[in-house]
Image 1 (tube, rainbow, N blue to C red):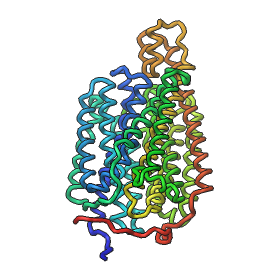
Image 2 (cartoon, rainbow, N blue to C red):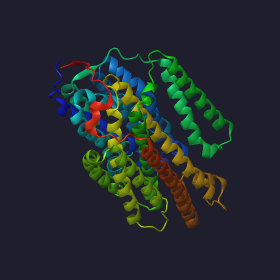
Image 3 (cartoon, rainbow, N blue to C red):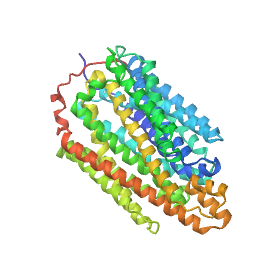
Image 4 (spheres, rainbow, N blue to C red):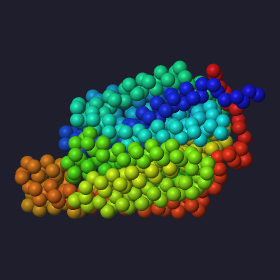
Amino acid sequence: MNTRPDPRRWWALGSLVACTLVIGFDATILNVALPTMAGELGADAGRQQWIANSYLVVLAALMLPAGLLGDRYGRRRMLICGLTVFLGGSLLGSLADTSGLVIAARSVLGVGAALIMPLSLAVLPTLFPPEERTKAVGTASAASALGLPLGPIVGGWLLDHFWWGSVFLINVPLVIVGILACAFLLPETSRPASPAVDPASTTLAVTGLGAFVFALNEGPARGWTSPAVLGALAAAAALLASLVARERRSPRPMLDLPLLRHHGFLWNTVAAALVTFTLTGLLFVLPTYLQAVKGRDAFGTGLRMMPMMGGLLVASRAAGPLVRRLGPRPVVTGALVVMAFAALLGSRTDVQDGYGWTALWLTLAGFGFGFGIIPAMDGALGALPRDRAGNGSGLLMTLRQVAGAVGIAVLGSLIAGAYTHHLDVSGLPPAAADAAGTSVSGAHQVAARLGREALARSADAAYLHGMDLALFVAGIAATAAAMLTATFLPDTRPGRSAARGHTVVPEKADA
């Protein structure tokens, strides 16, 4: 049997980097546009959370069936399909003129991303031998992670020079490059014997996650004891429980729950999910603070998020050698501690603080994310049997995206609740009070129109109170994750991959 690595593997990795860069890029590029869209489209805090979260909810819910489609019908073919859908969503978003259409476009983007993300990772174990896999996973993960802080910078520049729809059009050239690269550089791999996509399980996943995020988004506005919120939480619990029960009974489940019995896969996945929860929350709360509270323009906001990218770049290069020297457990645990420290520092932000304080904790957050996500992703993928790479990578990325969606929903809800509670609208006409209560940007517009400087100061203080609370919760979550990984994460070295008890199973590969 010929087990030589594919000679095109490094060129193929370039095509995967283009794909994952698009996904990371689009997860955050709209963040700097949210304050602008809040004013131009009349999007309140709840709508803004849906604009950000619709992409993540659809992405998380469809990633598992998307991974199976790639396994059965060809990963290259499905990657190209995903990029094509992503292209269509980008064009739809650029033409949208209401917040509802923006949410619809973001949902279409989520469908495309669901095909791109797990399949771009699933092909790595089939292309690279164990001694090269860490570098390959690190490169692909770094591309996706670099897209997160890069998105606000490019988005900010576009907003300062064009209309907000341009943040969708910027995807078009990147997607076209990704399609061409996949078509000409990526070898086709498939596993026709993989389980079939189950429409019922897919429906349960989409509706269950959607109901859960709806409850988290709407809780601050409607009240946590309102019938709509309690009903959505009950529906989410019932739907997700039905999904798990159905998958446990299935002889060939789409949701491969037995993979969670592999301790290396389970705890690396938990670490990756909680790192994502923390970083996604930070990236959601920060642009509004920099734009609405500190008065920066969109491009200036993106530039002021650069320290996170600097920390991430350094960490992405140093993570591999550090893991080889110390092992993954101390590196991942230490990264989570750094992220917790960064979030707790951020929770001490005051209205009078200068940018230097923000740059300090952003840099630390970038370090923590880079040192945490790359070893955790590599450890999770390395713990998988080769013939379950599609299922496992889909489950891994699903849990990561669920964590990101929950991060936005939970932290966004904390900010919205604190903002509404602490905003002083006494003496305002009812219509003006309602407009000021939708968002800090809305409060500043009302203050400028009525000449009420006290309202603007109250809105800034109210948002800062909510942001500090959200960052404190993110710091506590990262601290809990560090304690879990320090206790349960297997202390392995990359060189011991062959001893993990997994047999390399060759897959069908077409040159």
